[in-house]
Length: 207
Length: 173
Image (tube, rainbow over all chains, first blue to last red; front, top):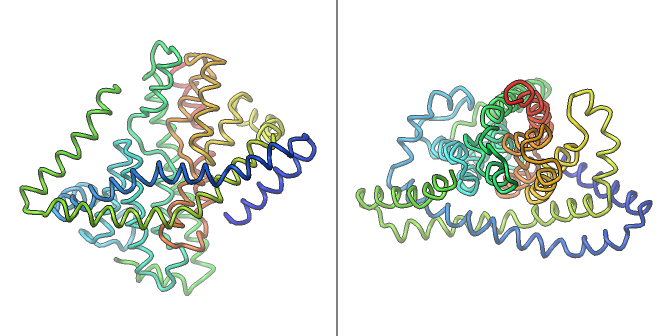
């Protein structure tokens, strides 16, 4: 899916540039993009390293167990087969908590750790499991309680009430996350009905 | 507001470190172990980020973004999304920094307290950079087949965009 989309976007861009006469710009931008990717990786990577360190300290001190107790009712509902207090459950909790607080950089290492744990319990770790996909989906939807970036930019643009958007953001977030969860559960149902052997993988998934 | 968010990170780090020390954790070695794990994640995610950056810069520089926005005006109008918002909805799932630039443009051009400014703000607050997140997680966890991750996330995004328009019109206009 991702492979196909990337090719589609690139070919569409090529054709558009051909008709727009923007071939030079396109070529320059393409050659520049590895450098941009390095910059992005360094920016994101530094904060991932920092928060991985903090996360490991929190894990070793047992602080994450509190968190997983707090989230456990939602957890067992969303992620079937997840064991309480397992490393995967703790990482999922940390990921959700960091997302709610708006610490996107801290959420990433925790989420990646959880997905890796989910995948390790699969028969084929290179195929995303239903639990992994649901966690990725929760991270592609914005769970952030207070949209700080949008509010700060509004303030800078001279808004009289930068936080006025709050109730609307919550409503839109809830609707979008719910739709995503329903879509993921529905698609999982269809995919697993087609591949009966796959349901065995899901049952094994209890890291 | 910005005080609260800048207070939270130092406070959280201090709290976690203090808790660890009182529970006899070797702070330095635990932190180092974590950072090493983080470095492995960073190495794993670089190839996917490179490919994604390449695709997005092609999409933006070729004018394909503007072309697609214009083509989608009619179906978007049916969903209630105003046409100045369209470039934002197309770029938002792909690139965080790109969407931020478009968002700032909308704010300066239409004003943050106009209907369009409000809808754009709610969209920025209630959605995430979907493709970037999927690429990041899949490459860092060595997933080759993402199965239905993309369509399911796009369902959530589409709902997020429509709900943003609806929520602004219902709640704060």
